[in-house]
Length: 498
Image (tube, rainbow, N blue to C red; front, side):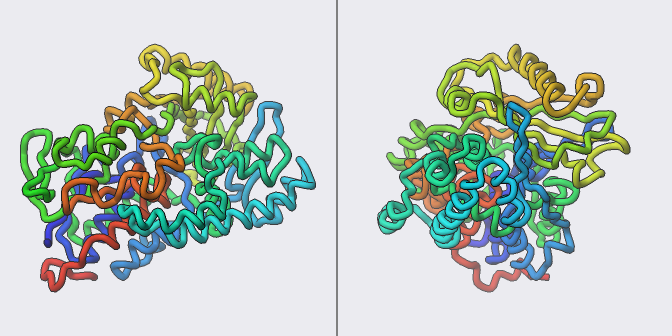
């Protein structure tokens, strides 16, 4: 087996291509988007630049490894800069909480709300470290396609109380209601409801504390460009604006793909960086799937959807942090409506990204670049986005003007938005979900879509819907799982590492 096809050029696909090349494969990447990066696209409007995808970088060593596999240094391609604070939380009554820096900085902020919660936070981080040591260090790059692997972990997961939700875990250590909100929002960054998401994802607390939160100078698009440069140096073939319609199977083995235009491309193995629910529903014949794969593709719960508003301003807002999380008056009730209702809630909480706080290249002189993200129901809800999107945009701008960005309506420029309909159309996201399959306990590890396809041989899955999960560390780690599953090519003359 010498030729590998990677379907999808998101970070899971990029990492897979680079790892397969290090194993000696001839690699071709196919992606339907106009640029590499999957959801990490970059938009430019009237001199403003906007990252459309993930902007939070944790565990930088995962990104460094891909360069080091080929004798390179990530620092020679793109700069990572650590942020301080990591996030600023702003509550509906105007209170703010800066999270990040040294642990002493966070503890001082906590003490302003409830001095007794300082010790609780220390215990929370200590418990998070225990989950991290298992869930991240030991298991994030291990294959989980065998049930025995999962069964072997159950005693440890029970001992760490991973049957609890993230909200329950946080409440066991913190008492202040605002701090409980601030330290339970992390599941939303991977598409989960803190009141439903397994506390395995509580490891994020220690993950952030271990390496901090970074930003790629030039944006996530600059990181994608760095990987593209590396891939070109390694003679990895990249074909964009190319949509794969079907996985080709012969004698129960994946043998290539068929494009939307009917063209067939052969390969010895296929890696799908595709929403797995979409893959099993639309790209693979039912006869080529296991019964478990069919069940998962029909019944796996999806993450929430996203409404993302991009805009520039012809003035600067220097008091706004790089990452701001604005929490509305309702928390549990709002999240329930987002994840369970069939209509758009009347209110919202928001994540505001201001990259110009760190990198002035995102906007013309004297201007700021922003995007604001509002969690919303996915397309399983009966929302007419053609009519609702302009109304939601108006409400968000009014709210930002009142609470965060004074006079925004008079200074806004180059604005546009994306809805779950765009996620479905542009990224073939099933149900327009922002993060594929939701991170429930019953949709984690063996219960999640397997990295080794539940069907044809030589078909592998990476990305947000597979083990270990969504978020940049998750999708990059899914390619490390692939690394453990795919054999190395011996004496392939086509590959020469620089």
